[in-house]
Length: 95
Image 1 (cartoon, rainbow, N blue to C red):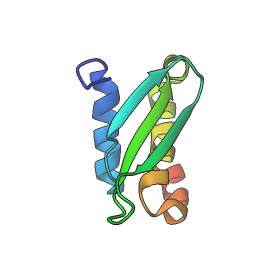
Image 2: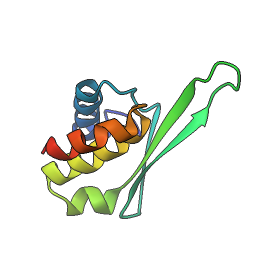
Image 3: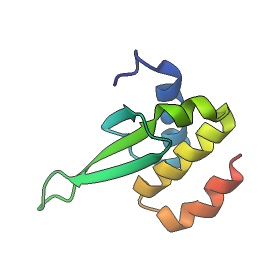
Image 4: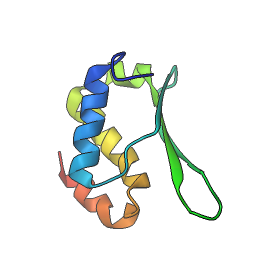
């Protein structure tokens, strides 16, 4: 999926990753689940770089309002931020 397919989703992801000083997702996959998850895949055992993939369900995007979607995305971004535990409380206060 690309930004031209769902521009609002990608704008929100860009906004949140910038605010949270987190890496961007390399891939975003839209599926038919009421769920969101992140998978981090090591690119190289030696360099420690990772590829981040966001799975997000279309039913969830349709069923939640904009603020709820932002909260879910912020939660998922916190998993790849490298500061998962320290950002937790801050993420929940964002909204």
